[in-house]
Image 1 (cartoon, rainbow, N blue to C red):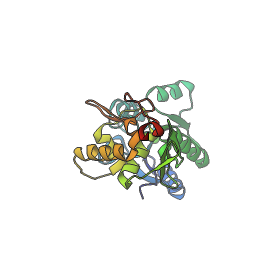
Image 2 (cartoon, rainbow, N blue to C red; image 1 turned 45 degrees about the vertical axis):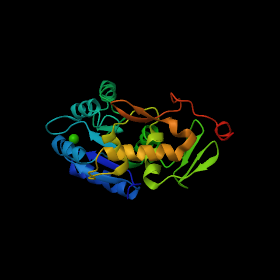
Image 3 (cartoon, protein in one colour; image 1 turned 120 degrees about the horizontal axis):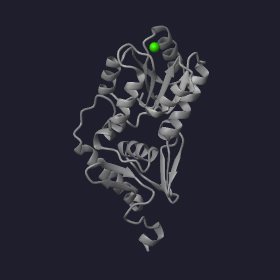
Length: 241
Ligand code: CA
């Protein structure tokens, strides 16, 4: 079920973790539970979730320390992160956000509020997870209908190219390494050579035809989708004239 967002819940209190997990499951998410920093790190090493709910007060390393470390790591820095805490102080809230959290919820919270915050963060950080259509510089992708158009002309993409484009458009202008793309597009526990990414990027560019230049190679770093490619995107009529 790749379209159900995976949420890593890092929380040492089983009752709270269970309550969160049940509510997430009922609302179309795939929760995984880690009860301390070590198991949370193990989960992250194995697979990247779509979002992390991170408790501040954990045995061993605190949530704040974990948030800082994950934000400093290129592999995990883009994962949306919401901090949970019993602390309601303004200074704590600021510290959490400074550590790279996208949002902050003070306990006790209602599950309704939690779900609303999760959806808001996902929409902001990863529009491709919210199931909304995306348009960038004349290139449109609609996840509901699986349609891709450029300047209103339909384009035909294979399933992997579609997922790749969806991910790139969901975080346009950001550079993604091949390893990150493998994680996000090909999925968890799949060991494929990084070269495979290049093959599909090439196919994607071909399928995008006139808009192919929007998928840029960033030397030594990876790929990005940009609305302002270095090579001009030509209007369709000019190319076919
Ligand atoms: Ca705790």
